[in-house]
Length: 181
Image 1 (cartoon, rainbow, N blue to C red):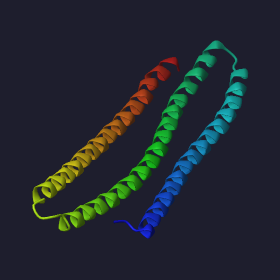
Image 2 (tube, helix red, strand yellow):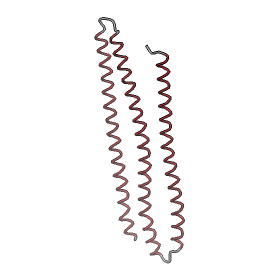
Image 3 (cartoon, helix red, strand yellow):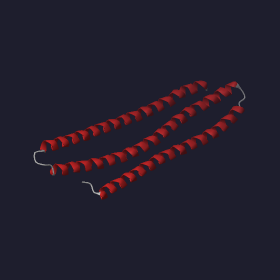
Image 4 (cartoon, rainbow, N blue to C red):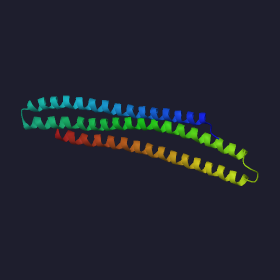
């Protein structure tokens, strides 16, 4: 049986975890805001530079060369921005996952301990019911671990695919930029 102190301690730990996760989420949002401000500042500076460059063009050929020169860095910057957003999201998600897994492991331990205490105090003749409960708990833990591993593998595959697509997109723009130059 849980005492009032145990319930209060559990609630306090849950509140601390919640605030910790909220802080991590805000850190991720802050990083995204900083990134977006940096990108906006850079884009404004580049727009001014590009406008000056376009206004100083003397003929159509020079304009085409200028346009081609501007195209390649834009694709690379877009890919870099996407990569940075993904990295911020992945880091924030990893931290939340780490905390959630630690919390789940703690709950799992406490539940297993409660099952053991209940099994020791179970009336005679209930061995089959206790074994069934232990078996169900073990099956649930195995299922969770399988799902967790599958989710981690899927995230790893998704990250590899994202990196491949970003790299391919940048490489695809290179020949087009060279042709215009």
